[in-house]
Image (cartoon, rainbow, N blue to C red; front, side, top):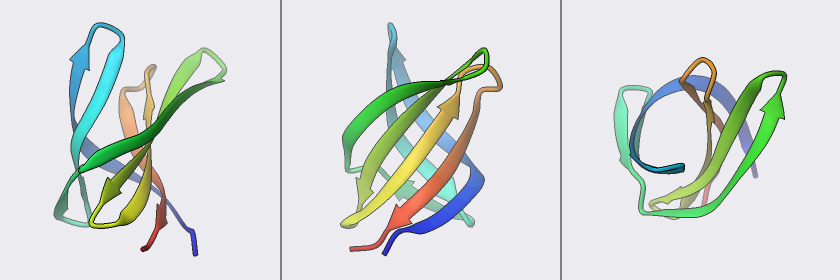
Length: 81
């Protein structure tokens, strides 16, 4: 069952050219190492470009979003294994 979270988080990411590769994120005072980015896509919200990432950690799927205008990351959803 998908759980909607929509909370601001901290993310460690590697930026190479126009590629963004999230490596870890912290949520509720816990650090999650990203094992795999399963899908990435972009969307627009006004002038902002939103970068979305589906990532795996311990068989759970997390949906992260980076707003390029505010440079704020959010954890949007969690799908437990």
